[in-house]
Length: 413
Image (tube, rainbow, N blue to C red; front, side, top):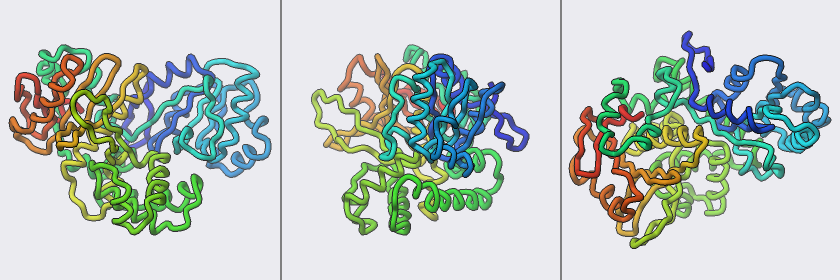
């Protein structure tokens, strides 16, 4: 199904649509969360045509009704879509009661601009009654109108030796990765706005709205300038280990405050912390997560004057991996791997059976040394690991070693 964004007369499909449709056919409630302006409301309205009430808690009258008489708001036989439900967390108790009175698939579709499972104000998780789905900003292939993410599923389902043929058959649509990093994946700047100046205006408005409205709805923040400095410092540490003590020193904030602010950024889907791959065989591993952002356009706007670098290309790849992971019904997760000796692999994709190690290099001519840590990882995990994938900015697909394939990033994404 196509989800219409209404941008330059382009119709864009979303990667999550098949998964969302499947979940609505099974569970009484489906909760779609993600950062504000990723397209949740459009998705919710376009996906569920027919007799269905659509209520948004951005409407003050609806919000007041949710607080005064939540059971009346969600009652009745007609299926209900509740938009921005994080604005009235107690409404989830009424949703639970309605489900328990009359349990049927697709009864509720809830959207929220915060991770309800991480919010301190939310005491009702709808356990056993709801399926959760994250809507990330547009992937590159969604922006191109293909309605999907990168070819991760195909890579995992294809024997390693056939990867070159698989990737060579992908659409040949190269583009400038710095340009992609600058526009990010939020639908408005990624698809509708044509100039860097227009996008800068949009990003500035988004950040101000987040700081002055959305953030205060999640938690009491007395020092917005401190919070903004912390956001900027986190953008300058993109792709690095999340050392809260060092971040606090950068912005003159105590470590507990830094921890709280990072948690708020993560709850609102702006910050992403990638956990370390923790299976320890013979090497001592670093146990700290790495910091990334949900959208490189926001990160570059906050960093003020920073040019896209290798960490931003990593972030582009990570965003695509997260969108694929969270639209998938079967288990998959994304980690980083780093030893105390400094050996590291940018991303490790874990599925039920395999590990896929991925290294990202902002170079058009990858060298043998660029594959060294991928080979170390493979030696450590043996048959459990697939061949290493080295993504670069050039045009060639080649086995740089017997067990590491170098390929253009745009062939995969």
